[in-house]
Image 1 (cartoon, rainbow, N blue to C red):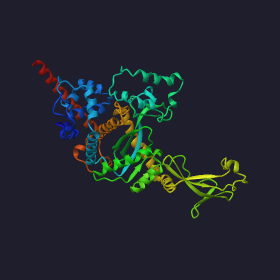
Image 2 (image 1 turned 90 degrees about the horizontal axis):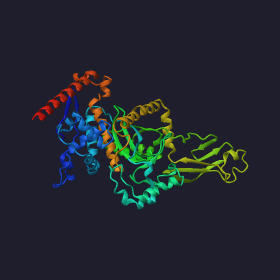
Image 3 (image 1 turned 90 degrees about the vertical axis):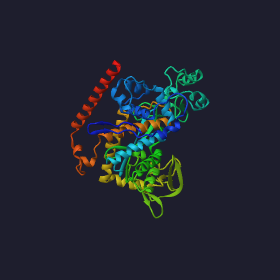
Image 4 (image 1 turned 180 degrees about the vertical axis):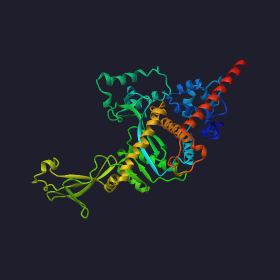
Length: 478
């Protein structure tokens, strides 16, 4: 277990719980001395807490900071691990080690009353991959060059010499006048990180990204689930895994989800059906293509058909599937629209009128009615004020603007640790919403002002730095 818990006045920085037994399987009995698992995890935390997006910067910063040296248990004259050791150890440890830490911090937040579990807000963010658009090659070439891509580790030097054959191929598109923006994920991939995908936000340039899916408890904005996906996967395609993670993480602590808030990116029949199957109330605005009523057409429930303004019937013909969505197709007969005065503006080039309804239209209608209510409008505002600020904090202050690893497995570990750092800040500084609203009695110490807390932290930190300074002088004198 971590040997040290740092107390700062009435605040306490909780150590990450990682047992040596769980990581012993990654080490042998021979060879050079390895980095202590506790030190490794603490250095990882330093990177996210200090917003250091490079293993080199983590080591360089730690070497100059006495508070960090104290945190990781190193003396002033003790040599820190090489930055490459951090990279190799991150690859060595399985994802379960990082997930275990995340769940332990989540449990501490629950025990402190920071999470209700009732309502979760979900959203996604593009996280820049450790790859550039210049590394794009055709998929066929990428497969043929797999032997080269295996040689690229997560911390290759900037002066790495790319094979000349691949350089020529990568530049051929530019010489031919082709634009990178015309490339697609089906035809091209990154040589340096094959798991990265091209994606773009409106008004932005195309970049190589991963998609991070984040769920946040609306009570105190604590992250309850986070996972990395390929950037070309839509929000709705990732939702089943996110929901499964949320249910597992909260269910392990006796909490159940009652409501989920999301944006229109999750408005798919599969998502709505999944929420209904799990008895979860969803608040997800329908996409812009949704039509509650079709102008000029009346639906006959009993006969399952539409009737147009001219009295012609559009009967059900067949089912049609497109992009994981299934539709019911209604059409008029070949002679029905022949002499219709609205034919030119209504019928298709074949001279018939066709309508398509989702087989889950009832779910869309229910959601549409729900979002029109006062509570539905309130949930929409709550989502934008809950999960979006959390994602902004992760990106701008917790090192999640760009991953410094390669491969979706390492990207997932990277995002998990960013969420751990964020939740740790909440755990140390957070006060339950129920406490702020006065619905829960608090100990006397918890009623101190924020300035008193901050003063206690600064005083303790100054005392620690003075002690370390005196200690270092004494060591130098000896």
